[in-house]
Amino acid sequence: MTRDEALEIVKDEIRRIVPDADFDAVPPDAPFREVLDMDSLDFLAFVSALGERTGLALPEEDYPALGTLSGCAGYLAAGTGQG
Image 1 (tube, rainbow, N blue to C red):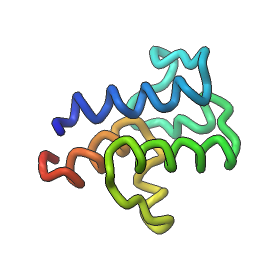
Image 2 (tube, rainbow, N blue to C red; image 1 turned 90 degrees about the vertical axis):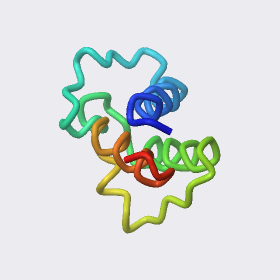
Image 3 (cartoon, one colour; image 1 turned 120 degrees about the horizontal axis):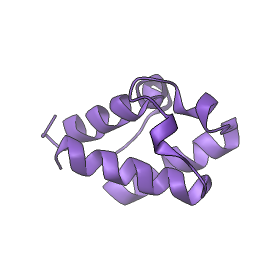
């Protein structure tokens, strides 16, 4: 998947957890958990959903790479050989 496709998947999965997420208020390199008031359980649900949707293993040691929109998109694209 391309980086743009990955970013759309990330946004879709965040919207499932934070339905009123305003992505215009989230800079690409800002920690979206803070901006969107996601707690740790929300983040774990998000990571689990990403793994299910993409088929990628998302180990806990990689969670820091998933903390921003840009980081998530890059990680997912790289994981599918497109990054």
